[in-house]
Length: 151
Image 1 (spheres, one colour):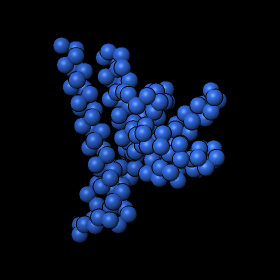
Image 2 (tube, one colour):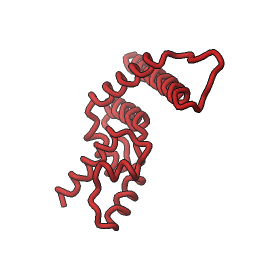
Image 3 (cartoon, helix red, strand yellow):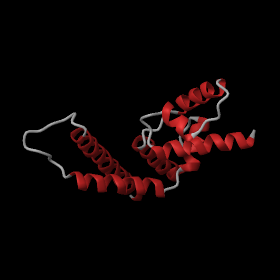
């Protein structure tokens, strides 16, 4: 029975997460002028800004750096029983929220950067991955720096 309630809880969290993403995308489109309505905004932008900040704070407080590094290195989701499923779900939310590139995209970008004899850096990674949130760029950069130290 506890497994069912855990699944229900994860499904509810996922649904809330996706609804928050939709609301924030709506607000961003509205504020950028890509979407207009005759009666004004449906959702208060202050509320959505607060929601966005709280979700970012929550995801960043989970400290998924090790899981993100492992995922980037292997291209495989975390494993480990029921905790592995939770880690997979939370890591997928983090990657989705921050628009993180795939491990293959990161590997290709690093190979192209290395061909130019330039060291990867946060500003350069920001240019390579313009849609990726700066928090994910920072984690990718720390991962690449840790690889350089190991070599």
